[in-house]
Length: 314
Image (cartoon, rainbow, N blue to C red):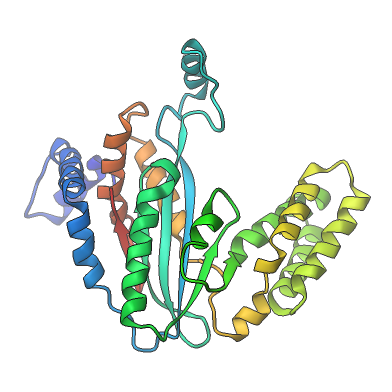
């Protein structure tokens, strides 16, 4: 919620009438206070974690979303500044990655009971987020050693390198990310949103989800598309993606064992919504530290889903 919207809300609710400028300063002050004693505050939150009684498994996931932190609204100017300094601007100019993660508690069927969502501002390799998630997971497993663990993420960045440092448990490619790639490949051939695309996607998605050899079936279908449409690089990329991660796509098996197979908790969606609100009023060239503090102090206002706790840390 922007300071202006918050000001209007207080006017409607009554009793308090803080100004827009006060509401703008408050998140910064809270963020600075949190940052100065972050480890202490996180330990208090960690000890307050409640694991539901019917929990049979835990799903830990980590991801990220690009946000316009350093001039993303004017990429041409960002590239020009880099060139003037003798640097090469790589990737989406002016964008940096916001980290997001979830610690989900699931029942015997792998369905969500409750979860904790984490958000953290731009930092090298999401190191702070990873450390917080590692400590929270270790705390939960120490208190409930009988609970099984699944590690879920997308194939981007160094996510798998991080999950490999966690206790040895199934590593699952996020089902929703996998189907996004599959849909993109089919749309590249048959057109975005066409009846043929929808039909073929639903058929292959169902096989991927329910058949023990579903990943092999999808790979065979993609290989066939690649042979027929050899000039479409998108199909070749998605085929390579599925082949590389085939061993992480045993969805039918893991569903039978009661594991969650996709983060599916809206972490990325929540952060994207938060980022969209920030873009409407945050100066794009504000220092990274100030961007982080503002983002963390306000992201929790986006309205966590039922049975989900949103935790943002500087």
